Image (cartoon, rainbow, N blue to C red):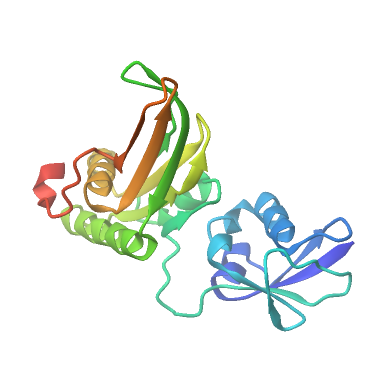
Amino acid sequence: MQIKVLLFAALAERANNRELFIDLPESSTVAELLEQIGNAHPELSSLLPSCFVSLNQEYASKEQVIQSGDEVAILPPVSGGEDERFLVTEQPLLADPLIKLVSNPHAGAVLTFVGTVREFTKGQRTVSLSYEAYVPMAIDKMKQIADEIEEKWPGARVAMHHRIGSLDIEEIAVIIAVATPHRNESFEAGRYAIERLKQIVPIWKKERWEDGGEWKGHQQGPWNPLADASDSE
């Protein structure tokens, strides 16, 4: 069946369209629709986890089944304070959306940092790893880091997305994109961003090793969120 999906606000701007036509199998759920949209329109993938879906002008759960002829709309958060450059999500991460978020006519360089899950840490083999976060505070601290960078490197623009939940080996845990007028600034600001993120953003990981041991804590071990920003330089 073909479903017409209505888009609003930032979604419509990103897609450059106010409606999409998506082919779905019969009895597909809202969650399956969102997955299909994310695959077909990667420019929307970073926004979808924070959006709501309505069916026939009523809010729908992710498990609700979509029927042929339903009026479907995807609604971005209405608080007005959301900034899609900063995201904590259980959905897989992609670099291209972040590059688009920071690209601008004044940028001569865009640096992307992609942090992935490695199999071995100090000789120990990781068998499972998960992240958890205090999400509202984590996003606020990401914005703080961006403000610090924009003050230190005028003209810089920053985006940060971090994954939470269970991740497999080689999956992406974090992506940071920094656009600056010149390339040297992008390298410096990108390094500052990841070190500062590990320093003050409340995201923790739980890692289980092959020998049965496990470690749970902040990303750089002893967490010092009150550390001065100069410690990241």
